[in-house]
Amino acid sequence: MNNKIAKGIALLLFGILLCAGSGEINATILYNFGDFPLAAIGVIVGAVGLYMVFSDMAE
Image (tube, rainbow, N blue to C red; front, side):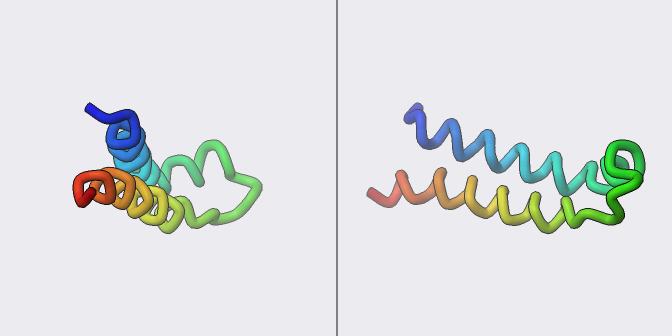
């Protein structure tokens, strides 16, 4: 497996983790910071991960 594909899969999984745990992260860790849009950041990170995975397969 290519190193770029592995990093893309890791980013995709991290994006899913951010989307799934955004409510709990905001409630416990960032309680005085307000509602930080971790779900939106997770979607962006996941999209970058998908790009990294499938851009290498097209070549």
